[in-house]
Image (cartoon, rainbow, N blue to C red; front, side):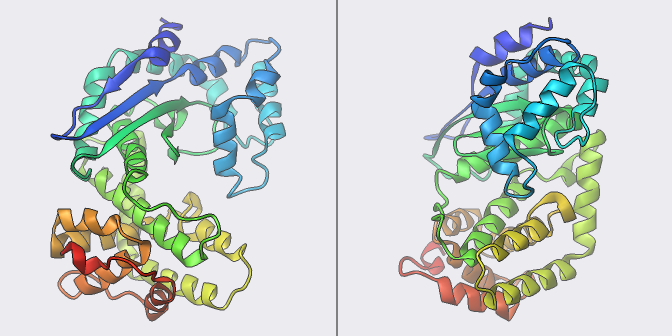
Length: 351
Protein backbone atom coordinates (compact mmCIF):
# COMPACT_ATOMS: atom_id res chain seq x y z
CA UNK A 1 0.00 0.00 0.00
CA UNK A 2 2.86 2.40 0.71
CA UNK A 3 3.91 2.41 -2.90
CA UNK A 4 0.35 2.43 -4.24
CA UNK A 5 0.15 6.20 -3.88
CA UNK A 6 3.17 6.88 -6.05
CA UNK A 7 1.96 4.56 -8.78
CA UNK A 8 -1.66 5.68 -8.85
CA UNK A 9 -1.20 9.42 -8.42
CA UNK A 10 1.60 9.75 -10.89
CA UNK A 11 -0.41 8.32 -13.76
CA UNK A 12 -4.04 9.05 -13.01
CA UNK A 13 -5.95 11.88 -14.67
CA UNK A 14 -9.27 12.80 -13.23
CA UNK A 15 -11.69 14.39 -15.66
CA UNK A 16 -13.83 16.54 -13.44
CA UNK A 17 -17.51 16.81 -14.15
CA UNK A 18 -18.18 20.24 -15.62
CA UNK A 19 -21.01 22.31 -16.99
CA UNK A 20 -21.98 22.04 -20.64
CA UNK A 21 -19.32 23.31 -23.05
CA UNK A 22 -16.68 23.40 -20.30
CA UNK A 23 -13.64 21.15 -20.17
CA UNK A 24 -12.03 21.06 -16.72
CA UNK A 25 -9.40 18.45 -15.88
CA UNK A 26 -7.10 17.94 -12.95
CA UNK A 27 -4.20 15.55 -12.58
CA UNK A 28 -3.43 14.38 -9.07
CA UNK A 29 0.22 13.76 -8.35
CA UNK A 30 1.58 12.56 -5.02
CA UNK A 31 4.84 11.12 -6.30
CA UNK A 32 6.74 14.04 -4.78
CA UNK A 33 5.20 13.46 -1.36
CA UNK A 34 5.92 9.75 -1.66
CA UNK A 35 9.55 10.36 -2.55
CA UNK A 36 9.99 12.71 0.40
CA UNK A 37 8.48 10.17 2.78
CA UNK A 38 10.80 7.51 1.36
CA UNK A 39 13.78 9.64 2.40
CA UNK A 40 12.55 10.66 5.85
CA UNK A 41 14.28 8.63 8.58
CA UNK A 42 15.80 6.34 5.93
CA UNK A 43 19.38 7.08 7.05
CA UNK A 44 20.21 7.04 3.35
CA UNK A 45 21.88 9.74 1.26
CA UNK A 46 19.36 11.92 -0.54
CA UNK A 47 19.52 12.49 -4.29
CA UNK A 48 20.57 16.12 -4.08
CA UNK A 49 20.88 16.61 -7.84
CA UNK A 50 17.34 15.33 -8.43
CA UNK A 51 15.96 17.56 -5.67
CA UNK A 52 17.71 20.63 -7.06
CA UNK A 53 16.23 19.87 -10.50
CA UNK A 54 12.72 19.18 -9.18
CA UNK A 55 10.07 21.44 -10.69
CA UNK A 56 8.01 21.06 -7.53
CA UNK A 57 10.85 22.26 -5.32
CA UNK A 58 11.67 25.14 -7.65
CA UNK A 59 8.01 26.23 -7.76
CA UNK A 60 7.72 26.02 -3.99
CA UNK A 61 10.83 28.09 -3.37
CA UNK A 62 9.93 30.65 -6.05
CA UNK A 63 6.57 31.16 -4.37
CA UNK A 64 7.66 31.37 -0.73
CA UNK A 65 10.85 33.34 -1.32
CA UNK A 66 8.55 36.27 -2.09
CA UNK A 67 7.71 36.36 1.61
CA UNK A 68 10.99 35.42 3.32
CA UNK A 69 14.54 35.34 2.00
CA UNK A 70 15.47 32.17 3.89
CA UNK A 71 13.34 29.96 1.64
CA UNK A 72 16.31 28.99 -0.50
CA UNK A 73 17.42 25.83 -2.25
CA UNK A 74 20.38 25.42 0.10
CA UNK A 75 18.13 25.67 3.17
CA UNK A 76 15.74 23.13 1.65
CA UNK A 77 18.53 20.69 0.84
CA UNK A 78 19.84 21.01 4.40
CA UNK A 79 16.36 20.28 5.74
CA UNK A 80 15.99 17.19 3.54
CA UNK A 81 19.38 15.88 4.67
CA UNK A 82 18.48 16.41 8.31
CA UNK A 83 15.09 14.71 7.92
CA UNK A 84 16.73 11.73 6.23
CA UNK A 85 18.59 11.07 9.47
CA UNK A 86 15.37 11.50 11.49
CA UNK A 87 16.71 14.73 12.97
CA UNK A 88 14.37 17.75 13.01
CA UNK A 89 16.06 20.63 11.15
CA UNK A 90 17.04 23.71 13.12
CA UNK A 91 15.59 26.13 12.22
CA UNK A 92 12.70 24.18 10.74
CA UNK A 93 11.65 26.46 7.88
CA UNK A 94 9.98 23.62 5.98
CA UNK A 95 8.19 22.01 8.92
CA UNK A 96 9.92 18.65 8.68
CA UNK A 97 9.48 18.04 12.41
CA UNK A 98 5.80 17.31 11.73
CA UNK A 99 6.72 14.99 8.87
CA UNK A 100 9.22 13.05 11.00
CA UNK A 101 6.81 12.68 13.89
CA UNK A 102 3.81 11.73 11.75
CA UNK A 103 5.37 9.90 8.82
CA UNK A 104 3.36 6.68 9.30
CA UNK A 105 0.09 8.58 9.57
CA UNK A 106 0.98 10.53 6.44
CA UNK A 107 1.52 7.29 4.56
CA UNK A 108 -1.84 5.99 5.76
CA UNK A 109 -3.66 9.19 4.76
CA UNK A 110 -2.25 9.40 1.24
CA UNK A 111 -2.97 5.71 0.64
CA UNK A 112 -6.58 6.22 1.72
CA UNK A 113 -6.97 9.32 -0.44
CA UNK A 114 -5.68 7.40 -3.45
CA UNK A 115 -8.66 5.06 -3.08
CA UNK A 116 -11.15 7.94 -3.02
CA UNK A 117 -9.92 9.83 -6.05
CA UNK A 118 -13.05 9.84 -8.23
CA UNK A 119 -15.63 10.81 -5.63
CA UNK A 120 -13.27 13.25 -3.96
CA UNK A 121 -12.57 15.10 -7.19
CA UNK A 122 -16.21 15.18 -8.26
CA UNK A 123 -17.29 16.84 -5.02
CA UNK A 124 -14.49 19.37 -5.37
CA UNK A 125 -15.54 20.23 -8.90
CA UNK A 126 -19.09 21.06 -7.79
CA UNK A 127 -17.66 23.94 -5.78
CA UNK A 128 -15.47 25.22 -8.61
CA UNK A 129 -18.05 24.94 -11.39
CA UNK A 130 -20.40 27.35 -9.67
CA UNK A 131 -17.99 30.20 -10.50
CA UNK A 132 -16.53 28.91 -13.76
CA UNK A 133 -17.47 30.71 -17.00
CA UNK A 134 -19.16 28.61 -19.66
CA UNK A 135 -16.92 27.15 -22.38
CA UNK A 136 -13.81 27.57 -20.26
CA UNK A 137 -11.12 24.90 -20.50
CA UNK A 138 -8.72 24.12 -17.69
CA UNK A 139 -6.11 21.40 -17.32
CA UNK A 140 -3.84 21.48 -14.29
CA UNK A 141 -1.94 19.34 -11.83
CA UNK A 142 -2.54 19.00 -8.10
CA UNK A 143 0.61 18.07 -6.23
CA UNK A 144 0.51 16.81 -2.66
CA UNK A 145 3.31 18.27 -0.52
CA UNK A 146 4.97 17.13 2.67
CA UNK A 147 7.82 19.22 4.01
CA UNK A 148 6.66 22.67 2.92
CA UNK A 149 6.52 26.10 4.59
CA UNK A 150 2.77 26.68 4.51
CA UNK A 151 -0.28 25.42 6.32
CA UNK A 152 -2.61 25.23 3.35
CA UNK A 153 -1.95 25.50 -0.35
CA UNK A 154 -0.66 27.70 -3.13
CA UNK A 155 -1.00 27.98 -6.88
CA UNK A 156 1.34 28.44 -9.82
CA UNK A 157 0.68 28.65 -13.54
CA UNK A 158 -1.03 25.45 -14.58
CA UNK A 159 -0.91 23.71 -11.20
CA UNK A 160 -1.49 23.90 -7.50
CA UNK A 161 -0.08 22.43 -4.32
CA UNK A 162 -1.64 21.28 -1.06
CA UNK A 163 0.17 20.76 2.22
CA UNK A 164 -0.84 17.41 3.67
CA UNK A 165 0.68 17.47 7.20
CA UNK A 166 -1.35 20.52 8.13
CA UNK A 167 -4.61 18.98 6.87
CA UNK A 168 -4.28 15.44 8.17
CA UNK A 169 -7.50 13.42 8.14
CA UNK A 170 -9.75 16.40 7.36
CA UNK A 171 -11.02 15.17 3.99
CA UNK A 172 -13.67 17.86 3.62
CA UNK A 173 -11.18 20.58 4.52
CA UNK A 174 -8.80 19.16 1.94
CA UNK A 175 -11.58 19.20 -0.65
CA UNK A 176 -12.23 22.88 0.02
CA UNK A 177 -8.53 23.70 -0.04
CA UNK A 178 -8.16 21.95 -3.40
CA UNK A 179 -11.22 23.80 -4.72
CA UNK A 180 -9.65 27.12 -3.65
CA UNK A 181 -6.40 26.30 -5.42
CA UNK A 182 -8.07 24.78 -8.50
CA UNK A 183 -9.98 28.01 -8.87
CA UNK A 184 -6.72 29.93 -9.12
CA UNK A 185 -5.97 27.73 -12.11
CA UNK A 186 -9.38 28.46 -13.58
CA UNK A 187 -8.79 32.18 -13.04
CA UNK A 188 -5.66 31.97 -15.17
CA UNK A 189 -7.93 31.20 -18.12
CA UNK A 190 -10.15 34.29 -17.90
CA UNK A 191 -8.72 36.87 -15.46
CA UNK A 192 -6.19 39.13 -17.23
CA UNK A 193 -2.55 38.49 -16.44
CA UNK A 194 -0.69 41.29 -14.69
CA UNK A 195 2.65 42.29 -16.21
CA UNK A 196 5.73 41.92 -14.05
CA UNK A 197 6.40 45.66 -14.32
CA UNK A 198 2.80 46.70 -13.66
CA UNK A 199 2.14 49.32 -10.97
CA UNK A 200 1.92 47.96 -7.46
CA UNK A 201 -1.69 49.07 -7.21
CA UNK A 202 -2.73 46.83 -10.09
CA UNK A 203 -0.91 43.88 -8.52
CA UNK A 204 -2.74 44.39 -5.23
CA UNK A 205 -6.09 44.74 -7.03
CA UNK A 206 -5.36 41.53 -8.90
CA UNK A 207 -4.58 39.60 -5.73
CA UNK A 208 -7.71 40.91 -4.03
CA UNK A 209 -9.82 39.74 -6.98
CA UNK A 210 -8.22 36.31 -7.21
CA UNK A 211 -8.14 35.54 -3.50
CA UNK A 212 -11.53 37.06 -2.72
CA UNK A 213 -13.24 34.98 -5.40
CA UNK A 214 -11.39 31.81 -4.35
CA UNK A 215 -12.53 32.36 -0.75
CA UNK A 216 -16.08 32.66 -2.08
CA UNK A 217 -15.81 29.46 -4.12
CA UNK A 218 -14.68 27.39 -1.13
CA UNK A 219 -16.17 28.97 1.97
CA UNK A 220 -15.20 26.92 5.01
CA UNK A 221 -18.12 28.42 6.92
CA UNK A 222 -20.37 26.11 4.88
CA UNK A 223 -18.86 22.97 6.45
CA UNK A 224 -21.12 21.70 9.25
CA UNK A 225 -18.94 18.97 10.77
CA UNK A 226 -15.45 20.49 10.69
CA UNK A 227 -12.20 18.61 11.04
CA UNK A 228 -9.07 20.15 12.51
CA UNK A 229 -7.97 22.07 9.41
CA UNK A 230 -11.51 23.30 8.76
CA UNK A 231 -11.79 24.52 12.36
CA UNK A 232 -8.59 26.53 11.85
CA UNK A 233 -9.97 28.01 8.62
CA UNK A 234 -13.32 28.79 10.22
CA UNK A 235 -11.52 30.57 13.07
CA UNK A 236 -9.74 32.76 10.52
CA UNK A 237 -13.08 33.41 8.78
CA UNK A 238 -14.69 34.52 12.03
CA UNK A 239 -11.72 36.69 12.96
CA UNK A 240 -11.86 38.54 9.66
CA UNK A 241 -15.65 38.84 9.78
CA UNK A 242 -15.34 40.51 13.19
CA UNK A 243 -12.84 43.08 11.89
CA UNK A 244 -14.25 43.87 8.45
CA UNK A 245 -14.24 47.62 9.08
CA UNK A 246 -10.63 47.45 10.24
CA UNK A 247 -9.67 45.38 7.18
CA UNK A 248 -11.06 48.11 4.93
CA UNK A 249 -9.20 50.70 7.03
CA UNK A 250 -5.99 48.69 6.55
CA UNK A 251 -6.62 48.70 2.80
CA UNK A 252 -6.90 52.49 2.98
CA UNK A 253 -3.59 52.78 4.84
CA UNK A 254 -1.92 50.47 2.32
CA UNK A 255 -2.96 52.59 -0.66
CA UNK A 256 -2.08 55.85 1.07
CA UNK A 257 1.35 54.33 1.70
CA UNK A 258 1.73 53.17 -1.92
CA UNK A 259 0.67 56.58 -3.25
CA UNK A 260 3.56 58.22 -1.40
CA UNK A 261 6.15 55.56 -2.19
CA UNK A 262 8.64 55.38 -5.03
CA UNK A 263 10.19 52.11 -3.86
CA UNK A 264 8.93 49.02 -5.74
CA UNK A 265 9.82 46.89 -2.69
CA UNK A 266 7.07 48.63 -0.74
CA UNK A 267 4.49 46.63 -2.68
CA UNK A 268 5.96 43.49 -1.13
CA UNK A 269 5.45 45.00 2.32
CA UNK A 270 1.78 45.60 1.54
CA UNK A 271 1.45 42.08 0.15
CA UNK A 272 3.04 40.48 3.22
CA UNK A 273 0.75 42.35 5.60
CA UNK A 274 -2.51 42.10 3.67
CA UNK A 275 -2.26 39.00 1.51
CA UNK A 276 -0.03 36.50 3.27
CA UNK A 277 -0.97 34.29 6.18
CA UNK A 278 1.16 36.26 8.62
CA UNK A 279 -1.87 38.28 9.72
CA UNK A 280 -4.64 35.92 8.57
CA UNK A 281 -4.85 37.48 5.10
CA UNK A 282 -7.18 40.45 5.73
CA UNK A 283 -7.31 41.48 2.06
CA UNK A 284 -8.60 38.03 1.09
CA UNK A 285 -11.72 38.85 3.05
CA UNK A 286 -11.98 42.39 1.71
CA UNK A 287 -11.94 40.74 -1.72
CA UNK A 288 -14.57 38.20 -0.69
CA UNK A 289 -16.90 40.95 0.47
CA UNK A 290 -16.37 42.82 -2.80
CA UNK A 291 -17.07 39.67 -4.84
CA UNK A 292 -20.25 38.92 -2.92
CA UNK A 293 -21.42 42.53 -3.12
CA UNK A 294 -20.99 42.66 -6.91
CA UNK A 295 -22.74 39.30 -7.29
CA UNK A 296 -25.63 40.33 -5.05
CA UNK A 297 -26.13 43.57 -6.96
CA UNK A 298 -25.60 42.44 -10.55
CA UNK A 299 -25.66 38.63 -10.64
CA UNK A 300 -23.02 35.94 -11.00
CA UNK A 301 -22.67 36.19 -14.78
CA UNK A 302 -21.94 39.90 -14.45
CA UNK A 303 -19.41 39.18 -11.68
CA UNK A 304 -17.52 36.70 -13.86
CA UNK A 305 -17.63 39.13 -16.77
CA UNK A 306 -16.17 41.92 -14.60
CA UNK A 307 -13.43 39.62 -13.35
CA UNK A 308 -12.46 39.12 -17.00
CA UNK A 309 -11.82 42.85 -17.48
CA UNK A 310 -8.79 44.87 -16.44
CA UNK A 311 -8.41 44.89 -12.65
CA UNK A 312 -9.45 48.49 -12.06
CA UNK A 313 -12.90 47.72 -13.49
CA UNK A 314 -13.55 45.38 -10.57
CA UNK A 315 -12.99 48.33 -8.22
CA UNK A 316 -15.44 50.51 -10.16
CA UNK A 317 -17.99 47.67 -10.31
CA UNK A 318 -17.86 47.38 -6.53
CA UNK A 319 -18.20 51.15 -6.18
CA UNK A 320 -21.39 50.96 -8.25
CA UNK A 321 -22.71 47.99 -6.27
CA UNK A 322 -21.96 48.80 -2.65
CA UNK A 323 -24.81 51.29 -2.15
CA UNK A 324 -27.20 48.36 -2.40
CA UNK A 325 -25.11 45.96 -0.31
CA UNK A 326 -21.67 46.71 1.10
CA UNK A 327 -19.15 49.28 2.31
CA UNK A 328 -17.72 52.24 0.48
CA UNK A 329 -14.13 51.85 -0.66
CA UNK A 330 -11.62 54.35 0.74
CA UNK A 331 -10.83 57.41 -1.37
CA UNK A 332 -7.22 56.23 -1.63
CA UNK A 333 -8.34 53.03 -3.35
CA UNK A 334 -10.68 54.81 -5.75
CA UNK A 335 -7.95 57.32 -6.65
CA UNK A 336 -5.54 54.47 -7.33
CA UNK A 337 -8.09 52.76 -9.55
CA UNK A 338 -8.58 55.98 -11.53
CA UNK A 339 -4.83 56.40 -11.92
CA UNK A 340 -4.23 52.90 -13.29
CA UNK A 341 -7.48 52.47 -15.27
CA UNK A 342 -6.54 51.59 -18.85
CA UNK A 343 -8.52 52.16 -22.02
CA UNK A 344 -10.85 49.31 -22.82
CA UNK A 345 -14.25 47.88 -21.90
CA UNK A 346 -15.71 49.24 -18.67
CA UNK A 347 -17.53 47.23 -16.04
CA UNK A 348 -20.94 48.51 -17.14
CA UNK A 349 -20.55 46.54 -20.38
CA UNK A 350 -21.09 43.45 -18.19
CA UNK A 351 -24.33 44.64 -16.63
